[in-house]
Length: 185
Image (cartoon, rainbow, N blue to C red):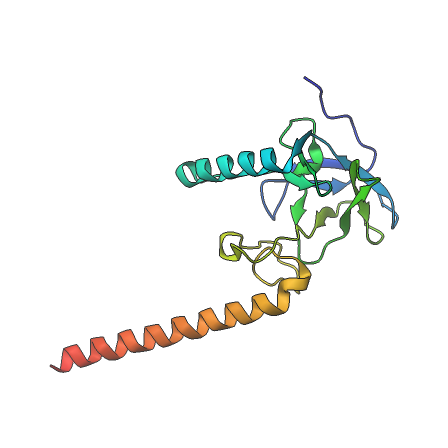
């Protein structure tokens, strides 16, 4: 079994965001190619099957670790292999790296800006809003929207969160009124 090759740019350690993460060993200049996302190339059909299998298992065990990454219209990369340290990169609403597809054959994480030594390397996972409530965000950044979603969905997500809070507030108020009326009766 292959082992993760040492990387000059980062080390793996415990993360305040979630589990383990990647941290800059030294200053990383903007536009640096930091690490390739590696694993098994799988068809979209196989990718969906594996992801659904993992999610079903997660419903029973409470832990889901789906490391599928879109490569192109036909293929994904199943990064659930021990030598793929890039899979440990956490989400942030204020990313300092982004994933780039090179020649539709490789996925690389590159620096969006200069990254200081000791900083955690983070990117926006870019999730859609299909099951947004299942993916709370723990990044803690100033502009955190509370859930893991692509930035393009943030306005819609904020409206959904506001609507949910309003419904919960109304529901609690109605419940309190009913309880007070019951006490009086």
